[in-house]
Length: 356
Image 1: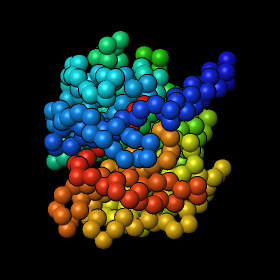
Image 2 (image 1 turned 135 degrees about the horizontal axis):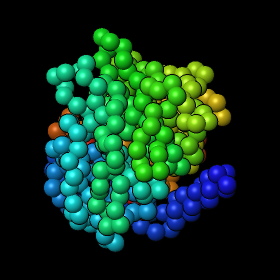
Image 3 (image 1 turned 45 degrees about the horizontal axis):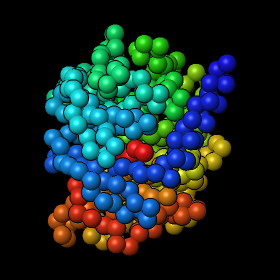
């Protein structure tokens, strides 16, 4: 029965991803100026639809394109995504201290928020808030929430089949306590620690991503200039892949996986993006990686991949023009990135999310 349900979910997600190539996709950008909605055109260019709304930080959307969730000042707000891509506020709920990252269960049942906690007291473990999504998108805290996490949890992700939650704990270099906390999702949305959790990780993980087929978990590690790759074993236990952690060009702060499980892209903080091909039990660097974004690029702030798996959107700061920009890069058959001419726009994005 479990295998049948998993197969059904894979087929459902496949249909959603396939449909995304036939209908509109929206790219949401969140920054200090608010949330803006852009239409992703067939050639990868972006058209501003609406915005900005109020100021928010990290954002996440459900795969069915119904709701968007955004972090504020110790809050998480629920928005309805209208047919035009515009968002309208539903309700706001309290979180823990300094919420840093938000993720939506792929089945549309729960929302999880990583709370970084009090920065002045790094020895104090932080937590993860859990919420049930109501019929109208509003959030209700799950019984027992918040749940314990490690030191400075900066990123949270839910696996493709709605079974597990993984949290990247930034930790402190002095204590060497950089870890990944793993949880099993109970029927009511509560988080139950997985055997062996927390799992050792590279130094200073700032971003976490999960393979769309639930095979692997990836983290971008800032201090040791690598990204880590783990196989998700039976029961959600993480096992580091042979060769992991893998080298990148410089300090990495973002990792994203393409929707068809072929490639992983890692932002190298300044102006390069490393690319790896996903193998059965290892990662292989894509020829030409890392890809140079240009001499004017200074700091990569956010990245996202569209559901068709054709384009990578990169938000960066241009130190020559002294403005924020978003550019479109085409994904080649071998995973290589190439700038799509004429697609760079003046736009600010500290976080990105795509939905069909």
